Length: 126
Image (tube, rainbow, N blue to C red):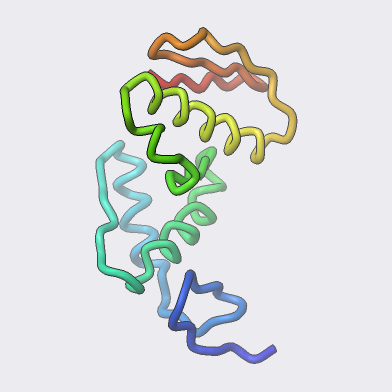
């Protein structure tokens, strides 16, 4: 199938014409390597999702990349700190399970801390 110009949703390099993202990805990776904070903040249809998907793929060789989708959280999840941490932990667990397949996890209850132990990694949400 021939490539097309995409004007809605995330671009996929094998389906859509795109600008070369590699210089931006290298710049962002340098910030990630330094532990620096960065934000991707643009209006609709400026490629935020596209750059985040490309960044996840770009970082996979050096980092364990976990993608979280806050759109999956309902409004009740934001009513209190405890409900947010519980919903966030569930979303993180879902994402990590999707990545690893089978997960062995130990939850520390509804305290403001949850921990998962899997294949030598410990993920802690505090």
